[in-house]
Image (cartoon, rainbow, N blue to C red; front, side, top):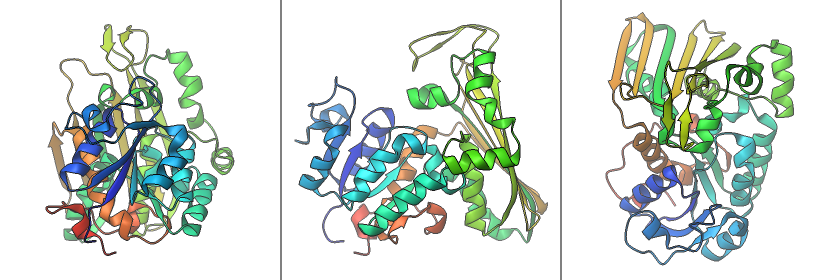
Length: 359
């Protein structure tokens, strides 16, 4: 593409600030910004993002259809909520206007195994209007990207284990709520963990109705299986609340979480495949104390066993950089809802983003 990529930023909170700045640093042109927060609507987007004024005012998300028709972005970056049901309308307004879209929504990395009806609806509209919708973020690099790099040097793999820990206060209210921050043990069981204590048949019925609540690693396991061409035989998850032995202040909730309320949760998803490979992914998202820090680990058992650990990764910036580095792949991809497991291997973009686009 000879001209700059024109992009829209849908959601101008913590993550949106990073993705917008990174995209502009890579030569993309901001043409639209949207949010629901009345405190920032009408402000110059560039000033809000901490850079020079852009002349682009932040609009209400309710005006997205009009804004897209007027600005005609090549791609929209959606950084709002964590579940497909919550980002569905944002994706559909992009699809109806022929705007490619990529989101940090955790479920969106592989929503076919948790919200197939919503995904199929978005897929159909995107195909009709010749654009691509997808989702990715740190969950792609942390859980699968490491194995994607060294897996080719492994002649035999029996089990893949991926673990990550992160501070929920770094991401915003949607992720904090999704991790049960501030819930009592009883409320956590009702609102978060209830989906873990059902039969496979009951779970599948919820998935088909769009009522299943996946942990963040549920969809990651689906992505890994699709990426490796594995056939899922069974998959289960377990969400466990995490409690501190003292009160901890949450910046996101703007209140103290007392010792009797959850500071987050740990989720484990185990997938058995027809090919005999077991995949176990675990995420631990909590409100950090001064002693806590981000870390992620990739382990494989086979020939040979491998153990790779990344200490103190900047998970927020890595998540947002993954989104931005994927933008050319989204523009180049076939129409429809296309997961990044079906796209080229994620690459660092040394040049401006438009130079990697085929159109």
